[in-house]
Length: 189
Image (tube, rainbow, N blue to C red):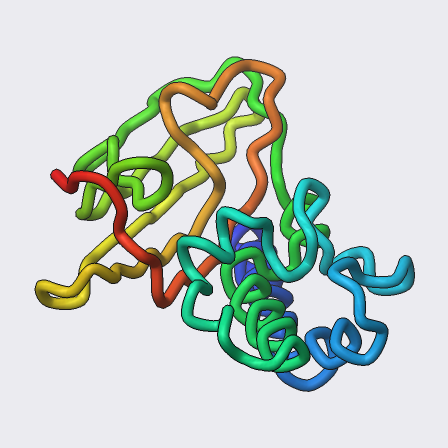
């Protein structure tokens, strides 16, 4: 159990390292090379399914205020914030697990909490599951709104668990993310 906790702390430490490196090294590299993808030697920080500065939906929903900035400043800030949202992507994938004969799935809070897509549901949820290897994994997610404004935030820590995607054989990556300013679109619940 102690080694399990130490491993989780280690992976979270690596996520923090990426967040700090985002300001000092990673985002400036993207500005200097003028591209939206990291060079191969920085691929551990690169999400596999999106550019390192986020995709168009991210720009439209979370970084809309950077559209009027100079290109270099927008690319820098988008890379820093995308890194905060998806820190240490490759490292966190390596810390994931493959779901196998899991049992004891428990969700405390609103299972449907989400802030993406065409609507949003604010709240918090804490999920746990015991995998076939006997290890217990958790997922904590908090989504809130700034007063009565049209912006919200989301914080997530743990493994990507939910009842619909936790299928035997699926990969559950470690998630450590902070999304500090999200435009809330659609209707909220």
